[in-house]
Image 1 (cartoon, helix red, strand yellow):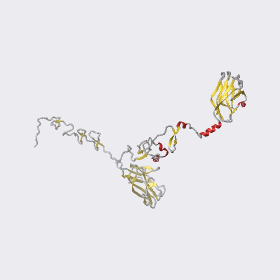
Image 2: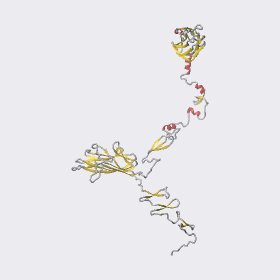
Image 3: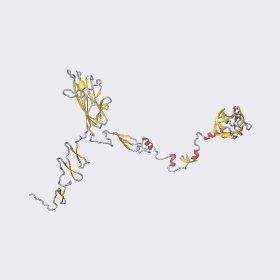
Length: 497
């Protein structure tokens, strides 16, 4: 029999919902005995701290986990699952004809029905290459519609090519029925291959016929009642391997289905460079700046190093020689210091032949410096107005004939530092020019005494003129004034052998 509960203390009120463990009445706030649900289809869930209501979703929506929502759940649309495996389905809607009898022709697939990791790529002319983007085991199934307009049966041969080369054992013969009445003979031939494929490879289906004028791989337009008939249909499905949506989805953030590993030598340390679908493992050749692989040349160098120093250098492996000395071999054939200093040795820099031989040669020809000096005729001799006179290297009188004032040199020498003296003022109407002549030709050794210059000693100590044995010299004096020149009294020149 039911009992009535009497409350003499802690009486419930209109706003209280449940009796808490501390013997007091409390309103519902995410706990206790009351439900937060209000509507048909609501779900009883919980947020981070209390029970909560998830309102019912829309028709066809499904419940999805979502950590960003308050309750960790939400209603959403059903998504199509990621397909597993790679595949392709292709066909052709044109009649294909062989170029000649018993000559192979690649089957063409101009229409793509489905494709995921398997594509048809052009051979440069037609879409024939069944190309795989991913490694795996694949089933390749084809069916071809052949027709024969001949009154006799004809044969068709079909085979497989891999990367442009025939696959041994892949061929097959098919006999196409002969024409009966006005109706051509027809046959659909079909079989499959199980292929072990590496990413990037391609295959082609080839066919030939015994009479290319009679047998075709035939396309038929839609009729009544059948729809159109493709000349060839191809399906490719992956059987094993890393299936689409199940394997690694990215390497170094690269998401390409087929990725390659490459070796390189760029950089100064080991590093991996990931670009496009290629991962390059760079290991540079070791050097003073690079941490990397030892080259074969360096290995040979290191391997050829002598373990222990022997021979002449064995005396200097642990101690230094006297500084700034030439190296010699001592009485025992070992490396030692010479008494000759590096400074003394440096004095031989530029020697091109035996020094003694050179010295001997110099002793016979003579060398050194001398001076040629002399007065010019009688003191205070002048050059006439606008006239040219000549004088010898050792003076002598002025003359208009150069050939009687030349000096011949018996060996090679050079002339320089020419001086010329005057004792009166040069007229203001022109200069007096003194020029050394070589073989009756002017040289760069010139002294110009300007118009109006007072008597003095004038010189050219900058230029020099070289002579070889047998050549000759003279001095030309040109007066550019309209009156007689200043009086000239001496000449001097240095000869260097």
